[in-house]
Length: 253
Image 1 (spheres, rainbow, N blue to C red):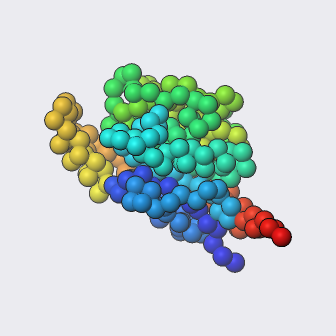
Image 2: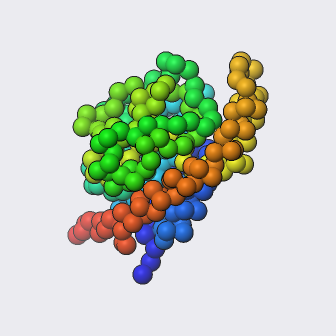
Image 3: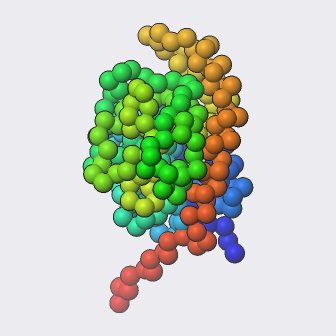
């Protein structure tokens, strides 16, 4: 039996699937990355895919177009996320991916009113998460890695809030039965956060203790894996054996 296909939308080279990709592959999924920032085209829909993973990146969820800050593929990514929600295709959306999921379904993202979040963080699982297929066994205050400047200020209608933080409330949520957004990162490797930290250090206006942020982020990786690898394995089971059927070509005769 072929492995279920998971479409992976990657927005920048330094923000690949990392350890999450390994966990999902080990759980039996076939990851099929698309890198639109490098000129690769996103599929028009999710036909033939069993699930969707949308990763993070430096782009802005509320700016779709071209130019210094925009990325022309973000509108197409939002369309895929809407398709996933409407078809109950299992979906994980991380950091920028979570912001895109929120915006795609009627939520709102803006620059963070309390400033950026960088490094090791704790989030608090909400009581309703006890009934969630992915979050039900997550500890009440799991370790995560934060690395974002924007915030999800309004969740979409009927979204279920699963985890909150002391700085930003909307840390994890579910839309429908099968689409999960996580404002935080669970996929990083120490090498990835080291690269991100060096980019942060190079910012001329940065006023952060980058050495402290990096040391704490690296130190928490084992705890992150202990909590979130089982979540990845539960997600992989939801993706299913064959994916969504591919639509047959229309009869033109």
